[in-house]
Amino acid sequence: MAGTIEKERSVLVVFPHPDDEAFGTSGTLSKYVDMGVPVTYACLTLGEMGRNLGIPPFATRETLPEVRKTELQAAADAIGITDLRMMGFRDKTVEFEDDEKMVKLITDLIDELDPSLIVTFYPGYSVHPDHEATARAVVRAVRRLPEDKRPKMYLVAFSNDTEKDLGQPDVVHEVAEMLDRKLRTLKAHSSQTAYMMEGLEAAIAAGEPEAIDRFSKERFYHYRWHEDFEESF
Image (tube, rainbow, N blue to C red; front, side):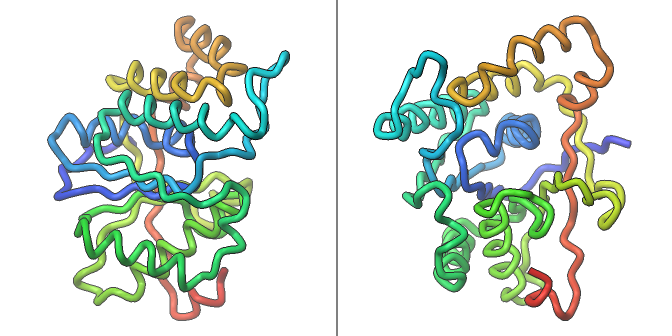
């Protein structure tokens, strides 16, 4: 059952690629913005290794970073995020960064922003190596805080074994009233999403239940803390 989105003190969003925020979190983030909650989005890369260069090509590997940078800003604008941080890592290399360096990056953001909520991926259940490295750094940074100082975490998980291992999502947000903002956010990333948007908008306009349910609800997990978590990923 979808629950009410509670007002937070501030929200820190950490994802590795432009468009990671669009599919599963942009409705929730739009609601926080409308509540007056400060939202900071730290995007680690510019997604310069994105698969889609167009047919015929609209960009090259050299020009794609600037294209995706412009799209990322447009997506943040669609959500209403004014504190967008482009952190300068290279796409498909986050997994090779030193773990302690990544933990320090997240720790520094937490120290600066004092978020009551962090939104990122769930380690072990987010498929892409850069997703996993990002999630791992966030969880480790939060784990090292005193327990009473830890922000909540809303974690996005979508690997095939997610529900088998983790069960049903802990948090489900109903964001139907934010669907227009969500679609605008997705369309902002047109270099990577144009191929799917026509069919998606048609399905929503036709009232197809599966499409409406998929995009009008956003699902998150809390981290399952355990003593040997460092060894679990």
